[in-house]
Image (cartoon, rainbow, N blue to C red; front, side, top):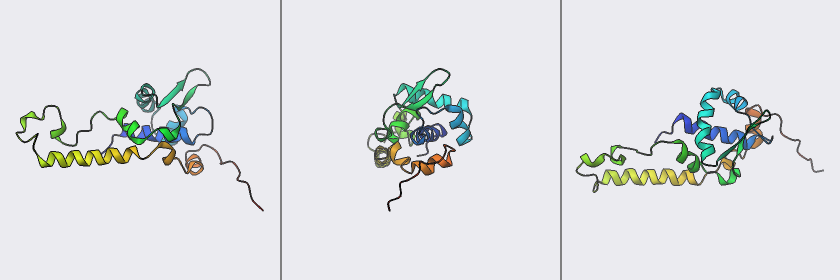
Length: 153
């Protein structure tokens, strides 16, 4: 299965928010960091806000932030709201009735098993996992320098 560009950048946007040490992230800065249009990111933002994955704050000093802790947002949560269909083959579509084997086909069962494994794997990974190397991610995204680490003598 190949996820859409929308899902890919939705995850990247969430990783940015998780790595950003400021309270609010700004879409223009995220767009610049990833080299995509602001309009594209605003389009992606709508389903994330509706699902409670992201919150928006309006106003001059507004921006976006994670709607819940990064540890509670899985890749499955994101893909569920950003992908239109999980159909891996025509067998999964609503109009698959034209195939006489649709309810007894071993291929259909194999596709379903693969899809279930894929979605199960996504459920195991959180935005926090993906941004665990927070300071490295932050520096690569132009979010400033990491705080100094204490030296033990």
